[in-house]
Image (cartoon, rainbow, N blue to C red):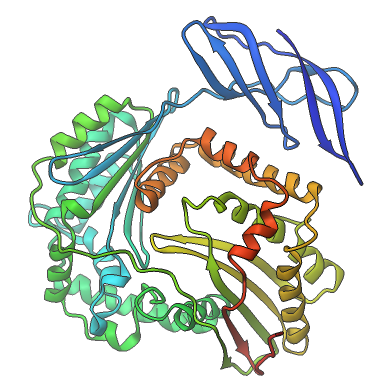
Length: 493
């Protein structure tokens, strides 16, 4: 099949459009001849193609190209369209989102409970993190060894984590092991015994982790920044504090878990090689009989960042600089503009912070900007690690680059940032693990789920004038400045 396309590409100093002819060898009996192809500069060929029944979307790479623009043609593949995500609510309040991925050889299940470090009692900070760890150490029916044998016997790749707002568990499994895996997790969630000796071991490990933070100044600086900027409960460290962890007792861990681990607090996201009907039927069979009223967790905590400068003295030749400010919430009209603004700042080797702070001036060995979403808003953060004698100049340049986003973002930068974000989107989104994480995050933050096509369209729709509009709406200052190093720094007016 031969398709004529207009390709936009970034030249050294200008945008260029070139017409190319592509020959596609699609190998799809259901494919008709109509194809609409949009080519991006990262070699991702988004397309819509007419099947006998309906339009479908996917990604194609050409076998051959003419016009001499590329010396070698990318490899052909057809990105199989995924089914639309579907959301269900069981009678007991468990919300389930499913995204079948035809052709996937595995299934990923994301369990997310809507309680986390923010729900820890003030005198028992770290108790949710302890419970998450000890959960796997036994039930009335099975001891820790039997549980670990069961995980291995089912071939489950698992992980778990505790954040400020939620506690999550992730399982990657073969489709035919789906029900057995759900039954194993259901037993743990509903009847974990939290053995006293295992709670004490978990406390010891947690206290060691808190001590080791002294040897990781980047992590230490970021935790200090969140505490200084957000306060309690949103600025809490999930690990807790040494005195509160020491005060945790096994019976308290059991009470805390039993009080919060209820069906009304559970979200389940499933992506991969199972159809939605099978997933919903199986989840209902395993979890539908779970009863119990969850305590009211109230409204989400709004994100508010304190306007302050904090110096934490650390005798060292290094200085760690953190800037924290309110960012765009999920679902806001300027959300994608905000993501692109951060990509322009810190989206790779050509980004502004890397270029101005590291490459041109050699000020910092590490510099980055990132975004974090919460139910009650969003955060934008900038981190730079530098030498103590160049810390002030590093801060000045970082703040200058933040301010410069208001006025001189170029079309080339915007296109490059869009390419970066869509490259990550398609790379991660084609994997069951990536989609399971994405759909559970959407359900948690917005109560709805975006398709990959919707996200890509949102990125594409951002215009050049929306970047300064985002910075005006969500200015990086006022905010919190934290410096971990030998001397305090002065922030500009």
